Image (cartoon, rainbow over all chains, first blue to last red):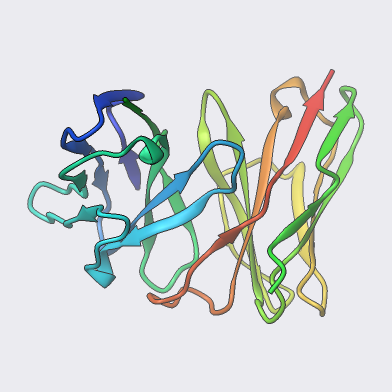
Length: 109
Length: 115
């Protein structure tokens, strides 16, 4: 069965510290992985997807098929990064997403 | 482009009633997905419509149904409401069904409270 696990409900770091939000998944086929972010009082929005291999707002994420992980990383956290982050999986060629429970990132000044 | 819009934004119903929520996708988008978000279960996929046809379905009871119109607007209906149906219902639209480069855009959600 498809499952996305985000083990941390809350992650608090100081400004300038590195950040890693963990995401593990289980899926029998070849999935597509995404990170979505929801800032306070804003809509859920796409942050990045593994297939693009891009860095968005300083965040990167690498798909590790061996460890079935897709951790989100940023070397130096900023206060404006404080938000709710969701990891999501989509089966290829199907527009059906499985979301993790989310991690609230709190970046302290 | 205007974003995804959902109406109403807030709704209060009582057990046993039914409710209809509406979603207008971004202009040109033909795929509309619905999600239920609760503190306990997080974001759960309900169903997805493309060109007026349900393409994908989540694990929800038959009380949850939906449809899509020719202009891509979508509605979801929940019949015989239960307390556990209280949630934020999110709608998301995208232009192409399942394309790797496609992006889902989410609406603000409809907050349903069942008393």
